[in-house]
Length: 189
Ligand SMILES: [Zn+2]
Image (cartoon, rainbow, N blue to C red):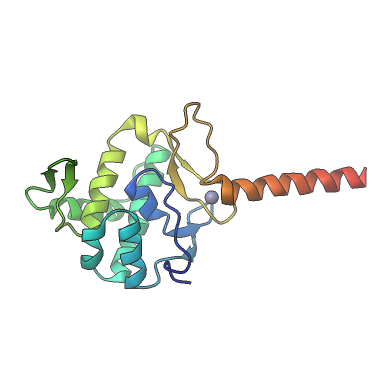
């Protein structure tokens, strides 16, 4: 189903996290459901992410998906303090190396914005670099434990007790499951 019919929720808290959440994953990082099925999906995602200008100039779909998978592996490696594979870091470095001299532009009344000529991989690489270079942020990134979800999100709650990508989906499913188990346990007593 296309993103227009079934939009992806942007709950990651950072653009690079929302980008890796364009698929669902098993707990060990195997792709379960791909949501970027076409160029149109990528364009919809870009617009929803506030990257309107990038929407028209992303690269080939298979390249974007491969880039996304590499970004996810790099972030997940950072979560357990392990070194990511060179082959996963390389696409991020390539995107950063290809940035125009003035990737950040002052915008009157809006502070600073990305140069609208950036490509999707460049915009994501900037976001990922900012996240990966801040211990205080990367320490707050969590993986949703919902079945076949494994979305990444920044837990910005005060007590750092956010567990689920969203209470409306994975959180509710877990609650219903607990309720069901309690009920069946009670009825077999
Ligand atoms: Zn989830």
